[in-house]
Length: 457
Image (cartoon, rainbow, N blue to C red):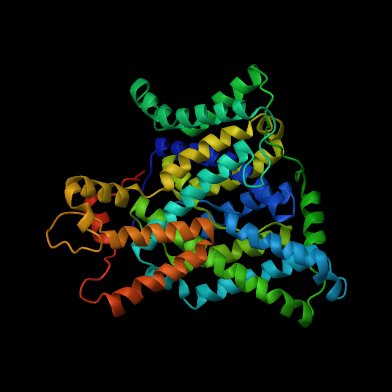
């Protein structure tokens, strides 16, 4: 197969995309590191290493992997259990070493899944469920940022006046939405090289510094500044106790993390495939995720998966080459060492504004748009349309399909994305093969192919 030749402009464009997403990856990595119980430095280091390894070896060409909310939540449970009682019950093993053993077993499980070619089973998930999963992730992003801005749901609000943080987030979101259009009008020749997201981050950071806004900023602490530091870290994190009781205690946690990484990664890859019109090599992607889990285990980090937020963002930043994801990892490592003071100037609310736009990009608007269009066209028949069958050739989304999407969305938001995807995939096939044989719920793939994607890069 012939190699694709890319231009200098495309090369620079992918470098800029990697640079932009690296700031978001570091910020989210720090947040997930704190949530996991291993600390911000462990989260940031993991964000860089996972992005680098999976972009080099993964089966999704344009993507960005890293610590994710679901993976971090389970990791926090393991950390808490190890601290509370497991370490003592297992002969005093270090809680850090126990978690690292869990991650090594997670890596082995993912590599075994790749070897057995189990990745293909993700294609059984219907598009109505994928659409609901995307919508649920988008709503979770929006709700999470609102909680951080207003201090809702038991979360502490960003320090400083709430109104100031909210205004910074709103202005950032507006800039992220509008700057690309402005750049195309004013500087069409350079618009492809300039990232609206990165410009928005820089502009709002400069504004916050000039006006000395009393709001919370990113805090990056710790670093690896020499090979000696890296060697010391590897020696400190390598487990010294590999007994059968320790392995048996770690295995259930490892299996849970592996299943979660499988679903989190391959569901996100389906979202990415929809946006890029490419096809992920699922087993190659699982292999890369396994390698990244082993890498962070050796470094005392936290596990991750292909991340919806960062993958969508890097595509929206016009990334077209595997290089972009690789540079996310490289830039993140460099920033941890060289740009710590500069990154610490970025207000946290700026990333909230960026993530509001990311949520908009993740949300699958097309089925909703088609459904509302159909309702408006037949408004006088709405009362009679519930579970009705359409026999014409119009492009439409039925009530059954929108209910499947809504159900998956709600279960993703209020319970768990794995439960949502598993339950509604099972329901989809159960209804089609048992209850609705004459008029089954359609997969939305034909609609998406006919109408085109609303979220194309």
